[in-house]
Length: 329
Image 1 (cartoon, rainbow, N blue to C red):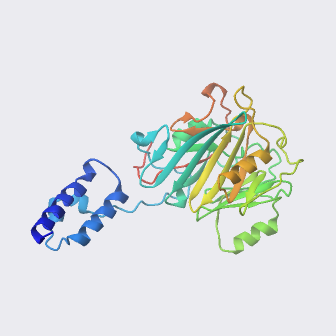
Image 2 (image 1 turned 30 degrees about the horizontal axis):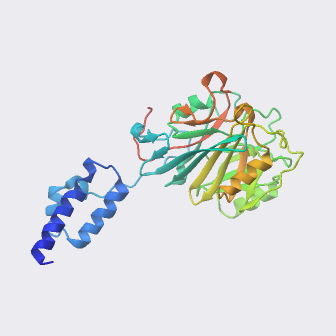
Image 3 (image 1 turned 180 degrees about the vertical axis):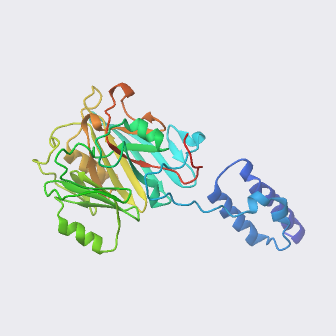
């Protein structure tokens, strides 16, 4: 190809690539294509920048969310589909698996920053105030939200609890398992948690962002755990269950097993643990189940539940976007 023909082709490519912002708002794609184009045809005279100023500009870095109880940023309403949600900071895919009289709701989430894994409480952390997960999800701009460990349902307050870096309780319950999320977004599970274990964890330099005393722990360091038949919350019974797991760096799965319906009998904790391992979890932890098990996506329920039979709870775990504006929907 002679020099003139090559220049014409590059000019046509420039028009197509640099016009993409009008059609496809994908910052990562545009950055990649812009950089490739500039390698082929350096903008030494600045004519590309003058002709396409918006497209030639570097995509701004997506700022992390603050480590506090402020809501996430407002999601793009047009990005929600039945299959999930995607923007420049988060990818969420939804799947329903109907197997052996159990309906599993599976949400796979990958985020670009640890601050997108967040928690919220119905009232002041540690108070007895309750609210619906659906209401808290809306208030906090959650793309997807699940119930956590029913923080206020601990009358003797014998638990180790953090929310968004704030210590709520520091009592150790050696009969219960513990889940910690750190500043890197990693999950850490502790079986029959002891004070010494948590102190050793903190001594590594990691910071505790969230801590949940509930369980049981389901998967630890890539190994499925054998659930103690005496663990609380009817471990051997088939019930609705809720769990979170980590599958990779800043990649997670949220799992709800439907139960107490004609279409889904629910699962035992051991069956839940085996399922979480099958999804590729290296760490996984059980949250409150039964009628507490709630998964809210785009303001609605990703399960067979209605607002009329949703249980009010004290806290939730959710994922938020970095790509939208601040404010409320």
